[in-house]
Image 1 (spheres, rainbow over the protein chains, first blue to last red):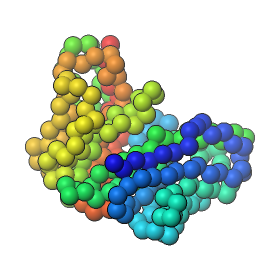
Image 2 (image 1 turned 45 degrees about the vertical axis):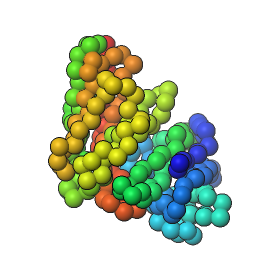
Image 3 (image 1 turned 180 degrees about the horizontal axis):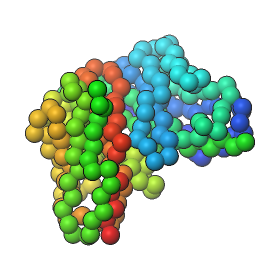
Length: 114
Length: 113
């Protein structure tokens, strides 16, 4: 079945450091890929998305490129801020005969320190 | 649109009691998901519906859990009887058919004492 694998956290960085959170997936067919962010005490919010191979999603300085050849969707940011501290989830939606199926990775906690 | 609405936001109940969590998806969305989040297990998919029909309930932990979607604008997740290990944050999410993102509610924090 389809699945999403993320790097384990927590990831601890200094402010203005470069961020990469790895995400790989397995799926039959052509899923859409997403990164969600969860700030402390809140629900999940969509951060960015890509719906087909080679698409790049971007938002708030974060970027991720849908790489079909490596089945990856790594999240990157050039300069993190303390306010980026949160848990980041990689996810895919895959169309089945019955409709959408949404699958999440386990989440990666990011801590950014001054 | 008000987004996905969950109620209650917080629930504290005694072991053995019945608990009902409610979700109103975004109008027009035809997929609905129930998730449970704990520190130990992370985010777990419990069940999802498409067009009000349960498609996959393999994530429901045991028979004490049940979910219904009587119409396109309302779903419930029921735990009967509740146990302390059910304490978690329960999220509901909805999406449109197709490869579109899901929108999450704020969650219900359940504490069973």
